[in-house]
Image (cartoon, rainbow, N blue to C red):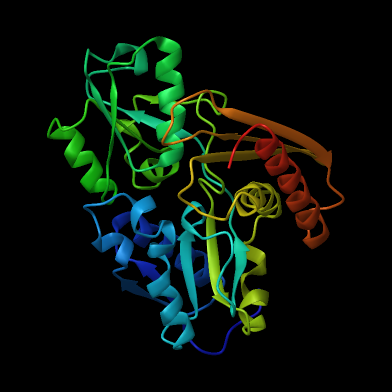
Length: 314
């Protein structure tokens, strides 16, 4: 890895999970001889907790302040959960690195109920995600459980778990990766298969954002990148971008790579008018795992988005 002459600063949200992610990247860089500091910041997404993200600007609210720190030179890079990163970054910024993905699946967390089918009458399930809402609603419809309510759940990971423990919810659904990274895997009662609960685009992966005019950082971060993960998330994010680009739409997209064969599946549901999910999938051979491969993956994502629109998604 090339050495950077000056100390580097990582901008991050101040939640426990975000700080873990920043410290993880710092440890990787320091193992290569870099000097690194972490700049913790509070974002609007962390401050607005009384409304759902889809009503106040989406998950991009978690990255705007970090981008300001990059633009002003107070930080060199920002570490994000990739599922929180808008599909189109503002001019002057770039996704410089994608690290190896942790478990992309969703986790069922409940003190008393082992699964959806075990919920008591009138139970409340909490989630912060429109995607999880439409997927859970579809699963409950198949179980004939119209009595179960799905309610918004905001706050950082510790806050969500506290609300569950206080009895505000019978169960909550969280990303398995976040629980695992914080040593909270023991709270997971059940991990949904990707067939049962298709993940969000980029879920489980970490992305590093920099200013576009910092090729020195792109070269520095290249050894940290995981080519296969970058390829799969490029396909997933392309679906979302083609469908409008919002991190907060009721859309799932998940890709897997076997050899050179890339399989991409997606699902969309109407958050306002309950009904069957619209599903789509496609696969293709990818030329390589570099930039040409990512462009081919994005083209596959656009094909899957077109299938969703043909099926009625909007």
